Length: 108
Image (cartoon, rainbow, N blue to C red; front, side):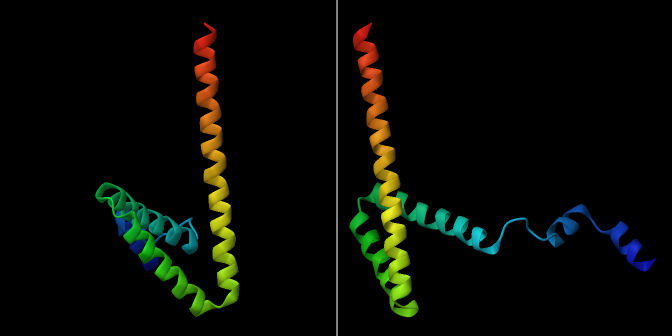
């Protein structure tokens, strides 16, 4: 009975704060890192300090590899290759779409 009373008296904000998130901790961390590193990249582009950002990022990647061993190095290089392929394919598709639009305009 007392438990039911406590639940009825609880404010909706308190109940929401007690709920277990639907997102895995790893996903929450990934989102947080995207926000933080994305802001750092925006700052580096704005201030033309990409080289400094790249140096800091590679420094910490090197630290991760040393701390976690050769498997970590393989994982980092695998993910890097995957991301490079993604950006390369995206840029190619954008160039092809632009060329198709230009050809369409020329045909009219």
